Length: 109
Length: 114
Image (cartoon, rainbow over all chains, first blue to last red; front, top):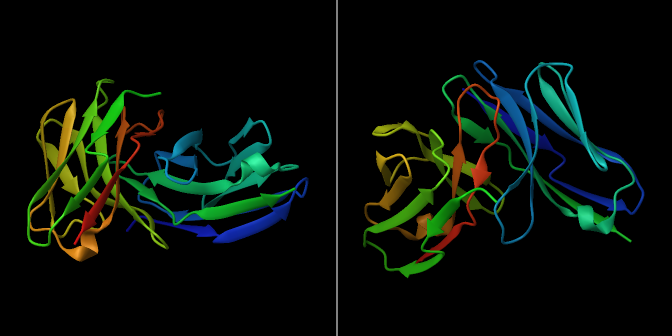
């Protein structure tokens, strides 16, 4: 059965304090691993897609990496506007898209 | 923004009544999904569709049914609403199962069952 586990559940950082979020997964044939950002009261906003182990993608202060069992979302020198819930999801061979519970990130000035 | 619209955006209904939520897309994407989001549970997949009249169950499908009679519309029906179905419901669309595209989300429907 496909499963996605994110850690930590919540993370508090000071502005400029770099850190990483973890996404561990099991899936019967990975088609893609996705990272999303979600702000309160809104739908998830797409950040990255990773397809194979060793792949990395970057966008501003965010960098996503992928291994055969987990993905990391690295946040470098975060700003208060990076505060949000970050969601990880995996898509299997049949198109099913399963999400983890998310990491709630708070960045204080 | 991807052309995906959910309706209604807010609804209050009574226990035992049927409720239908609509997801409409203008992107001609093959895959459509219904999720519910509750505190502490993240996004949980209810049902998804991989083509017209082709649907499959997700993690929390009990008490829900879906229909997709045309590419652009995916309907979620609560046969007899219960208080445990009070939640925020999100629809998503995705182009293929080849993993080369992301899923876009609607703005959500807040459903309250009293």
